[in-house]
Image (cartoon, rainbow, N blue to C red; front, side, top):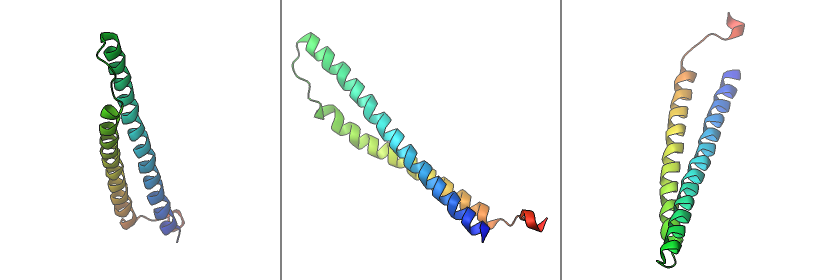
Length: 98
């Protein structure tokens, strides 16, 4: 009974970790793209090149962020769930059996 509860907890923790990593990775991609846009906008304004549209920079960054973050989270979930499944199938004596 305790083993099933521990397995469910381990799965939930791996999934929670994947959700947190997804958020951090997506946020990082957006922040880096925002900084690159600001740098390019300042250079365009200084050179007199005119207005630099934010959508041209940020829309591709959102798509890139979704793909990178989702791939990162999927790798964590896959690794974690496989590890939990493997660990739950190995028979190890509990403390009460020793």
